[in-house]
Amino acid sequence: MEQIGKRKIDGMWLTVVGIAVLFFLILPTLIVIPMSFSGASFLEFPPTSLSLRWYAAYFNSPEWMSATQTSLIVAVTTTVIATPLGSLCAYGLHCSTPRIRNSVQALVIIPIVVPVILIAVGVFSLYAKLGLNYTLTGLVIAHTAIALPFVIVTVMSGLKNYDFDQELAARSLGASRAMALWTITVPQVKFSIQTGAFLAFITSLDEVVISMLISGGDNATITRRMFNSLRDQLDPTIAAISTCLIIVSVTVLIGVQLIGRRKNIDK
Amino acid sequence: MSSAEDNTKARSLQKASTLKSEEYRERMTLFGLSLPAVLAILIVVFLPIFWLSSLSFYNAAGALSMENYERIFKSALYRRTFVVTFQISISVTVICVLLGYPLCYWLTKLSDRTAAILMVFVLVPFWTSVLVRTYAWLVLLQRNGIINSTLMSFGIIEEPLQLAHNLTGSIIGMVHIMLPFLILPLYATMRNIDTDLIRAAIGLGSSPRGAFWRIFFPMSLPGLFAGIVLVFILSLGFYVTPALLGGGRVQMLAQRIESTITVYSNWGAASALGVVLLLLALVMIWLMNRVFGLDKLFMR
Image 1 (tube, rainbow over the protein chains, first blue to last red):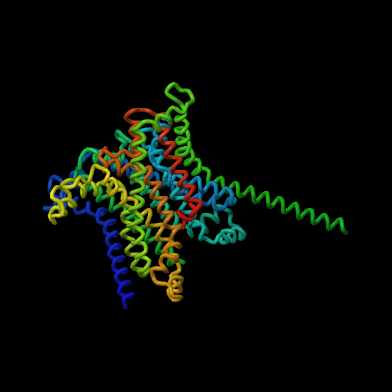
Image 2 (tube, rainbow over the protein chains, first blue to last red):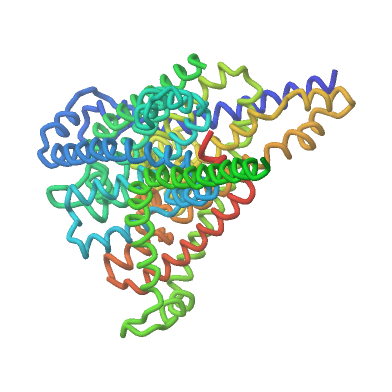
């Protein structure tokens, strides 16, 4: 009896801590949403009056709009370049010899864990020589390089679960390699490729440190403007922008989850 | 007769060797498909970092020397940066373990469905921009923010606490950003532990506590270790959150590198700091690879 009572208390303690940690994670993430609808001219929570004035401030500001445009153009271009390049790379590595695969794989994963500030300072000095700082091209190249590892890793894990004999069967029946790749393999790892594309998009859109150094002037990204603005003061416009960014992230997350579910059903 | 046999044998051997070399050639051609991506990563990520690292071995006059390293290890300012960086990274890692381990363990006791729904509480912050979450903490922790006003209305404190723009704020914000990085590998490992083992241990006379510490906990260690290393590496080089929530008072390695370049234009010292940070990160990555396998951590 005593033992069971003790176990119940253990279980309750665990539940309380578990729920508390989940709230610690989610509440600060979502608190900016109600704040963004505040009618007051300073930040307050809970808001005493409701309005859309901070959204109006965001959408009517030419600076914020141009930064948003830059970020979206860069994120879309990065996704369009990094997804096919990364998928091809994953396919190539998957088919090459194990020795090459393992060493190149490590090389490709390292950028995910190397401190971003080092990549940022490095790219900044490289671009200073090439005259690419403050340009859209420079931003796209840098973001593509840091988004590629995510695409490669996701597509490679998709290929791992794919039965390669199907492609061999198609080829023995007369399909060329390119045709077998395009009509047999790609549709089967489509979900991994889509997940990789989502990851590339979010990586580029949310990237702060590299953009902070290499973007600016007319080509400042939204994260660079937000970072600089937050350093000075707590502008409630940022709450409205943050809400928009959360909506984008959650949409992407739902996309990835739906893909995952469809993939499981297919199996 | 025998010469004909020898002939076919030789021909098939030759065929096998051409096949083998053809296979090798084909594998190499296919590897060629990886080259554009690999080159992009090498040129944009690795090349500048190596070039930057080489700068640290030259002094202001352009001669080879260890001056930059002597300087960063002798100067009190830089030493302080290292101490603060380690203090914060270790505190953040410890707090993440204390919060993350019970959460993951609790989740494994729930049904798959409930746990999957609750994981949304981990995934939404994980996918939300670091800037957005840092901004939220700036608002929550400010002098007249909700945390101070709640504590004051309950009479727990009389004066508002200084929570933002200092070390406390930086640590709170960083724990919030880093926690999912601990939870994701740890939870994946825990999910794969066969619960029958624990039931078997209890059936054989172990207490539930004993079964936890002697069976479940050791089996969860690879995931815990991967999470710890990941959180620690990312904390060591973290820029955004301490820069904003530290309010300029907290200078970790990443901020020091940035300000050494943008404010003082001292590339030599900055690159020496960068090399130290890079070495620390590489040692951690190597450790993680030994214990957990990088590909296992990132490819599931």
